Every structure is written in C-alpha cells, then in structure tokens.
Image 1 (cartoon, helix red, strand yellow):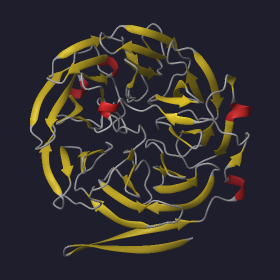
Image 2 (image 1 turned 135 degrees about the vertical axis):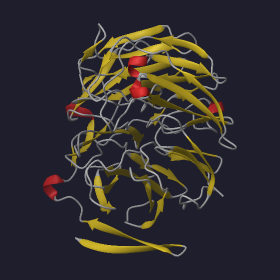
Image 3 (image 1 turned 90 degrees about the vertical axis):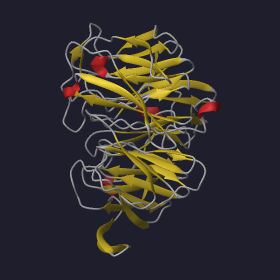
Length: 442
C-alpha cells in the first residue's frame, strides 16, 4: 500500500490531496467467473434522434453518463470557467436535464409539502418559470440526505415528466403548464423516493418498492406519455429500493431492467411481464445499472457485490447468466460507469475508486479519492474526452485519466456541496449545488 501526495496550484492557493493506491483484491475476494463467456449483442436503448444533442434524461443520451464530443473544460473552481451561477429556490438532489435552450429540475419547499418544477434559460441562467405540483395529503418522510426532490425528470421535447412519490407522476409542457397528473396514492417508502422515470416508446415507466401505501404495494408500471393513462401495471414483492429502470436491446429484442432488493429483474416493456431474474443483490439498491460488452452491470448494498449479467434469459438465470461477480466494494448511492473496456465504480462508504476490466471482472487498480469518509459521494460519474469525473458531496470533482492505470490528473473545487449529477451539452457543464445552478465552460 502506497500513499502519494498530489499538490495542485490554483493561482496563489495550494491544496494537498492524499491519494492511496490499493493493491487489487486478494484472491479470496476477487471476481469470480460463473457462467459461460458467450455474449449476446446488448446495448442501452437510445433516446430519439432529436434528443441526442441534449441531456433529456437521467445520465444523459447514453443513459449511463458517457458523453460524446469534446471541448468541455476539465478544470474549474467557484471563479474559474464559471459562465454563470444562479440561485435555486428550495432544496433537492434531482439532476438537471436539458432540451433546447431550457434546463429543468425539481425542488422541494416547506418540508416537502410543496414540490415545484423549474425551468432556466440555458444561455444565461434566467429563471423562466416555476410550476407547483399537486399537493398530497401527507408528504413523505425521507432520509435527510435524500430529501423530497431527488428524482431526475425526463423529457421528450413535448413534456417534462417527473415522478414525485406522494406527489404522484406529472407531465408539464415546456411553457410550464401542467399537461397531466396521476395520483399514485400514498407511497410509504423507506427513506423516501428517488427513482427517475424512464421514457420508452411513448411510455413513462416507473418502479417503486415500498413498505406499504397504495393498495397494490410495490410495483413497476407504464403510463401513456400523452395522457398519463396506465398502459400496464405489474406488482412486485420487494419492499426497499430507490433505483431507476433502464431499457436494453438484446439481439434485437428489448427488455426493461430493474436492479432491486436481492434480485435483478428483466421485464417485457410491451406488457410488463417478468422475463427473468438473477439473484445476488443485497437488501438496499440505489445505483442504476450500466451496459457494455454483452453484459448488464448491477451494484448494490453498502459496498456490496457487483454482478455482470447476460440479459435475454428466461426464469431464474442466476446459475446460467451471471458472467462474473465481485463480492464487495460496489457503490451504495452513485451508479457505476462503463467507458471503453473498463468499469469504474466509486465506493462511497470509503471513497475508493475501483476499476475493472468489464468483460472479465479483473480488477486493474483501486485508489482512494480524498479522505476516507462514509457516504461521501452521491453524484454518479461521467466520462468525456478520455477522462472520468467523480464528484463528492463536498463539491470536489476528481479528474481521472481513463484506462487501466491509476492517474489522478487534478481536483476541481466547486465551492458548494452537491449531490446531483452533472448534465453536459455543447461544451458546457451544468451542475446543481445545494443552493445554486452552475454553467461551467470557456
């Protein structure tokens, strides 16, 4: 185990960062190959062509934090490369999404009794409108770190769709008018709700695991994006989770993937029927799965296991479709990132970055980013122009060169805590802090 001191100059100021390079996992803890190595053709279902130039959903056009293009600054501070900075009313951890010259996000007020959607002009940060959502009889009682506005909205350029727990599911047009609203009843979710809606072929898909509340309990459901009418509704048996579904294409057929309590599920997006399950997750699941190399990568628990699953099976595929697994070290809150041949994960319980060779589960290196601190990262990492960006709750962004070897380039200091993930469009970073929305670029 070696410790390296990295010193970076910012004008006259100097900051020191202790970085620990950690030996790969011991043999007893290393990844295990379980199934065969024959992989189907698997990809994340992309956004519509009109949305590819924007950031219309959680984790962007790629659905997993990978940004195409170049020209994005890799360094900033509270004064360096700040195009504009504007206050955001209320509180919330939802990440900004972007369509055209508009930025959308949600905010909570009055202890969660009021939740609003806001739109800012992308070019200068001016607040264009704020629309209140219908109020429930009883607001949620979330964990302090979660809050009442953690779910990131999605947009198709016609409406902006937001899942708001006890405030229901809502669609707001780009002028701020409420297009439709669905009351989903009382949601009694442990620590509140946080999952983001998935747009898929004219449907808004949401899943919610909970301890009680609505008559049907936990569910995954699809709603018509134009009207809010229920397209299908499937009951679930799990009672804890805060994840977001993804849609993948497996040899030409689509599946909706849910990484949840104890199991990963595959559903038919046409009717919500269950296709397959794979066991191995722990009790608590927040991260959104990522896709690459013919595999779906699911992480769970407080530094729990990582599963690399071949989708496309039927029934219980635990023994046949888990290509490899690693027993511990995965994120609790941030989602993983796959970029090229490598899978990047930040263990937010100890601030340790682990990099795997995605196809095999071989650990290429581990490195501590900043201080070892429990629940220190919330934002999910992004990759752009050969670099990985990982932002902790204190607003520090660690810039790491992509690849199999440890290479921390520098650390950016936003000057404000942040738990939201960034949005990147047209060479500009858009980052939500606890009090402000930032546009960062040249």
